[in-house]
Length: 490
Ligand SMILES: Cc1cc2nc3c(=O)[nH]c(=O)nc-3n(C[C@H](O)[C@H](O)[C@H](O)COP(=O)(O)OP(=O)(O)OC[C@H]3O[C@@H](n4cnc5c(N)ncnc54)[C@H](O)[C@@H]3O)c2cc1C
Image 1 (cartoon, rainbow, N blue to C red):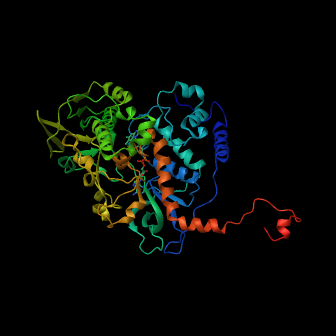
Image 2: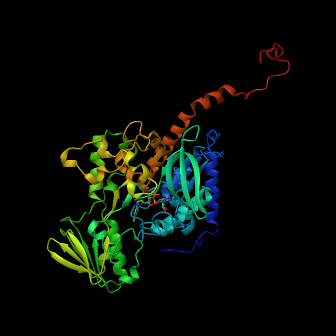
Image 3: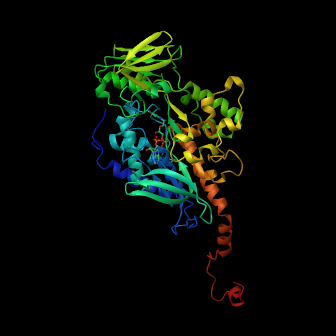
């Protein structure tokens, strides 16, 4: 189905870019600059917002802030240009899992939608015939989005340290960035962690697998040399979409056998994220009391993601693929360059293991969060669910405030945490689907941007008051013979 750029309508992408700029101009109200300059202890203007992560969540938030005339922002990403996010790295499906007509990055501007970009690039017929969006096309769209909107992104720059800016007169954060030319300190009034799935923790695998030599095992999010699996016996732990994508890649690379081991007795066939894609839930789940947020989101997180049809078909196309349901792993040990896995039904041997076992929220596993990990309130600090809804894994998720910012565990211990907004998957128990997912973006990004601007505006109330008092722009010119002027009334 793929065609060369613009082979149907030459110049269509250029026309679309012009249309985007025209639409932005037509909808720019209110566009008055309103952010005061705050000087940091280094004598330079502080950033209003630093966004860590230039995946789709970070990019779209940056654009929403620009639309709110918050322009003194910077987006940093530790990845090289074009390799941000998941799409060209460990997302091993061919197409997006979400339906092709979900909007999000456009923030309501039709010309900025993926649909408009796709039709300009490949033509309307191609769009009409398309089942799901090619993941490389989605990545190209995000890079186009970033370029035409002139988003201020700095690649190969990692956020490695976060501290309160105790030496700044108006508070804020002192942030350490690791750049190709060495460490750099910047000051910012607000920080957003748009650092992805493992942004507040780490990819998880059972300890007995983590202890195995790295040449025998990988997480589904790791870089994997699939070509090296040719002729090998591969065991995959987990039954979610990513586990299945990795199984499909191993099969396509010529693995001798690939077996998926699943703890559950039945394969999950529904996709709970499809159910929750309605305006009421996306906009308001965050407004529910703890009891209901926990109930909904822990149930959804507990179900995990079903395997998409395309991935299922990719696996089933290979006769050397099998699934063992009701077969958890109890232990594993390395033996003669192979792995012996203990299951309730006995031992099985494999040459290589891939774990599609998701993430674990653990602030101490992230260098930028570790120094104050114990100060961040978690759900288990704030809410005790009924016994049948208890879940220790989800209890470690951050308990965020209504602005999506961290909350201090003990009052007064780290009030500056309120300047750090969590836009990773770790935000989901508090806020519902976050910037992490395309379906939630339309609701989540404007809400987060509004939370940030609310904090900035409130903190600057005295400045805005003085600005009002100083405001002296007349809206009419009096006639020279106006008695009000001659009598000194104006
Ligand atoms: C395999 C897979 C497939 C998915 N498919 C779909 C789908 O089809 N539809 C859908 O709606 N959702 C899907 N999702 C969920 C979601 O849309 C993606 O995870 C998406 O990439 C989330 O975007 P993000 O910007 O929040 O994070 P990411 O895209 O992961 O971007 C995070 C960025 O932060 C950077 N970063 C991390 N730490 C630092 C740091 N300390 N300093 C600087 N930069 C840092 C990373 O380099 C990365 O570029 C999928 C998720 C996965 C894992």
